[in-house]
Each structure stands twice: as C-alpha cells, then as structure tokens.
Image (cartoon, rainbow, N blue to C red):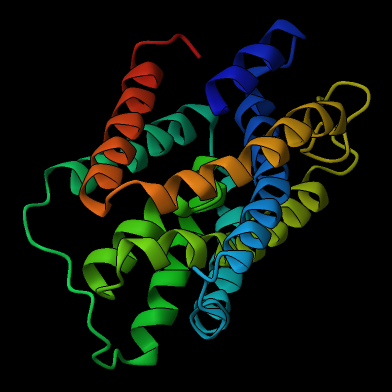
Length: 238
C-alpha cells in the first residue's frame, strides 16, 4: 500500500518534503479500518485474546504518540529507509527462524507485553504500517504466542496503534500549505475511503485463511510477502 500511495501522491505533484508523511498518514488511516474489520472477524472465530490486547495497547499508544512526533520531523528519504529496513528485518526473522514456536501458557512479565506494544507502536508511524509486521514476530518469538492467536490479537492492538498515529498525523499536518487540496492534515480522505473499503472487504477473508493454513506455512508466506515488499521499495524510485 505504501509504494502505491507514494507513487499516487507524487503523480499529484506532492513535494518530497511532505510526500512520505502524507503517504504514511493515509496508510495508517486505512490500516485502522482494516484492523477493525479483521479484529471483528477474529473475535467471532475466537482467535483473539482481549487481555493481551489491553496490556500491549498501553505500550502501543505511547509508542504511536511519540513515533508520530518523530516521523513528522524526519525527512522523506530517512522514512523510506526505515520502512524498507523494518519490513526486511521482520520478514527475515519470520522466514528463516528455525526454532519451534512454543505454544504453552507460561507466564510472561507484563513489562514485556508493554515493551512489545511500544516497539511496534513507535515504528508504525515511522514506517507507515499498522505495526503487525513488527508485533507478530515479537509475539511469536519474545512472548511465545501460538501463531493462530497472534494474528487476531495483533489486529486488536493495531486498532489502537493506527488510531493514535492517524490522529497525530492529522494534527501535525493541519494547515500545511504544501499539502494538496482535500487533505485532512497528513491524511488524504479520498484514498482512505477507496482503499479502506477494499481492506474492510478483504480482511475477513484473510482471517479465515489464517484459520485454515498451518502455522509453519503461514509464517513462510508472511515472510515471503514482506521480503517482496521490501525489495519492491528498494528498487522503486519512490
């Protein structure tokens, strides 16, 4: 979504000064709609743990709040680099990890849950993503969650992450004269509506697919998709 939005905004004549901020803000607004739809679907499938969502949301909200403040003061070139590195690193971890995922219920300190939420929340506005590609590996390998519960639970956390980041992007971009007409701060509502409808429609199918695919296969597919995205960014003149 980020590469598409960046190319779209560039075709509109958006200056490089605000290109990535507008791209990320719009992407996060779409992520909010998609995560709400996905969370509802996972809740109906009972693959979501609300207690875990609540704990990680604390760190996620703080991370998204501070991460957005940093993102709006960072150059587009640096934001592109952060986006590429975040996706590539997360993809490599998911794809090449050989250790078997532990699916027991050993107690995990609450601070680790909050830390995982903070890290994903902080990186999300800096990379224009909901935070799932960061949070999912953290939950699988740090918090030792079974992959079937991770996807649904992470969707719940992303609702908070994307909501706070979107609000902050709107606030920081409000009245910026470099933005094209029709923008709500660093968010372009027309694109949000178009992509949001598509995401909301497709999110339930993704949730159903997660229930039908084996955990190991799901991780491989997830890792490959993220690697493809990172390579796309590296070799695209955004």
